[in-house]
Image (cartoon, rainbow, N blue to C red):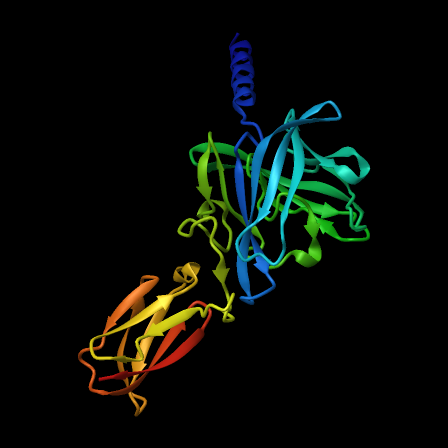
Length: 318
């Protein structure tokens, strides 16, 4: 009798768990991924945004339309669409060049399970890869328990496409939603998920929950993060310091708003090389009081501590 009751309870629990599993790529779901910016400013980390735009029918399947857009300062004019549908925890990806669907993710998979994927592109970098599930785990994100697949790629062929690492129900793969060339994979903070949002989970900004070497919980999702500043960008200098002659205040203006997400300090030196004043830049436009300085010429050194890049300007206190 006890065994029968326990059996009924197990059926009820697993049935409810299956019923409550949220759908992948719900309407208006959004993803933000960090991507390298190869053009000026050199060394920047921009972003690509993916957003579910609606539904369409492809080969009899109701598919989500995913709009992929590169963010501000991206080196590419990036705007295209992808198509997915979810069937019993298996996410299918439409491969337009071969007019066929391939398995992108299988969230019903267990350790040791595999699936193959044909990758066909319009630019000739075709490939066939095999995805293997190394292990399975669960993580609580925004109070929801989500299944996590730890993936690896085997049987690499011509182009070395890979899909590996944590792949989370709702969020997808934390490196990039789709397989990418191994040559494009760099440090995880430079090619990886920043944020995810939908109407059920809410907004999730990557934090320590995922155990990664980076977090994004204190930075806006649509930020361009400069790792090296090359100026001018669009004929606008990164920083403006004015006026050249002043008896009260000096203004430091950051002309790229996202620069403020760095730790920025300043030091003022007199003509003998002695530091006479220092501080931190906390605003995109900040005034510094220089009334206590003697009348003379000075050099101000503005340092971006995270990337150890500095900018120097001269001014005269009168």
